[in-house]
Length: 212
Image 1 (cartoon, rainbow, N blue to C red):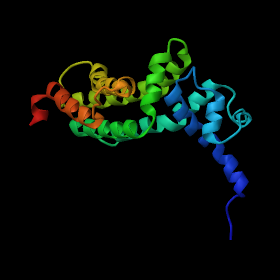
Image 2: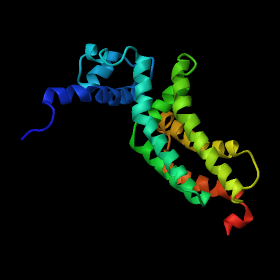
Image 3: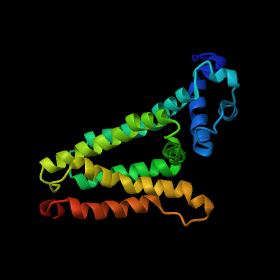
Image 4: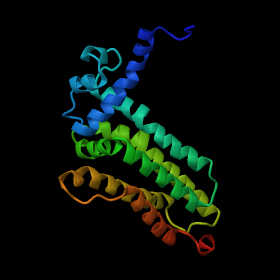
């Protein structure tokens, strides 16, 4: 007995998610300005008119890409931080390993490069990226580091700056991959970069008692 919805109804219900996944790929490959709704429709296997049933503009599609395809990964980071009261070293290793895996296995890096490269001409995509992703990740790590300071694990210092120090090498490594590897530069192993970086950063951050 078929207890599900009719096939065409299920297919129609899936369309917004399929369009979002298609847009994620197209944005990563072409950038925001060059990406056309025709490209997204072709990748999603729908008509251009079908896109307008769900999204009014390309900016709306980008917001959906960030909210549905990328932001859940930041939600996972926030959940990991909330569920891990200490020690900080274990949390930072877990978080950076998780994010490195996501970046390596998805088109997220290409979209990041797009935002960095096109933010001046399309400030709204930078605003969405900052508000829904960057500020959320930075805030979660800042709070975790501040809590570790209160426990006596981390030396005095601005916890937000510590959080920026944690995140920055990953951004540089991603931009390296998206900008220079395609023209023949030797790639970096993002997971290895972050393991070495976290070990180095912790040497400077942790108090004597937290390192023993």
